[in-house]
Image (tube, rainbow, N blue to C red):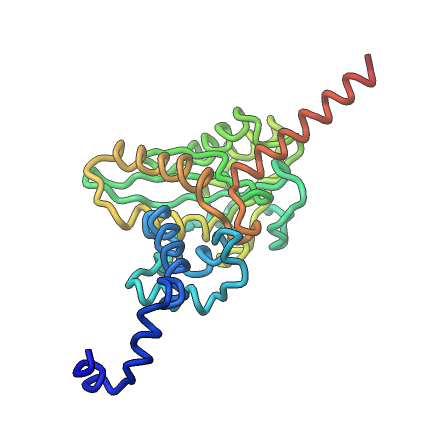
Length: 285
C-alpha cells in the first residue's frame, strides 16, 4: 500500500480516509447519473438534457441543467437532435382568400377550440405514404390522423373527421393550416361549413405561421421515422399510429405545456367538463 501511495503521490492517511467513505461520499453524483440513465432509457434514448432535467424525481430537486449535461456526457448518452425540415406545401394560386385567425397565438386557454394540421411525406419501399394530422393547440395532443398513398383533399378531411368523431373538436372551433391546395380546396371548405369549423390559414411560404404542426412532424421524424426503413405502407402506417397514440400522446412530456403529458391534460379537461355537466344537471333537477 505504501508503494502504491508513493507512486500516486498521495499520503497513506488520505488513502485510508477515502477508503473509509461511503459510496455516496466517494461519488456524490452517482445517484443523479443513475436517475438520468433510467429516464433516458425509459424514453428509448429520445430525451435530451432539458427533458430529463424537467422529469427528475423530487429527490433531485436543485440539480442544475449543467450537471445533467455533464452526467450524460460521462455516461456517453445523448438525446435525439432535430434535423432540418424541407418545405413541402404546394399552394393553390387560385384558392380563395382566407384569414389568419390564429396570428401565431399557439396557446389557447381551452382545449378543442383551436387546432392546427399539416401533411407530411413518408417514404416506404412500396412508394410514398402521406400522413395528415390534427393537433389540439391547448394540449399539444395529436387528436386526428389519416393516411393515404395519394395527397388529395380527402386526406386532411379524414384527419379532421377522425378528431371530430372522437369529440376533440368543439362547435365553432378554429382549424389552422398552411395554404396547401388540400386545405384551401372547396371540399375542405364544404366539410368545415357543414361541421361549424372556422378555417384559418397562414401566409404563403411562412412555416412560422403553422409552427406547431411543423414542430410535431420534426419530432415525429427525428424520434421514430428516421430510425426505420419501412418495407410497406401498412408497416409505416402502423408504426406511426403506435408512436403517436402510444408514445407521443400518452408518454412523452411536452416542454410547451410545462413538461406535462398531452393526453393527461386532455383527460383532465374532459373530467372537468363532465363534472360541470353533472352539477348543472343536479341544479336543474
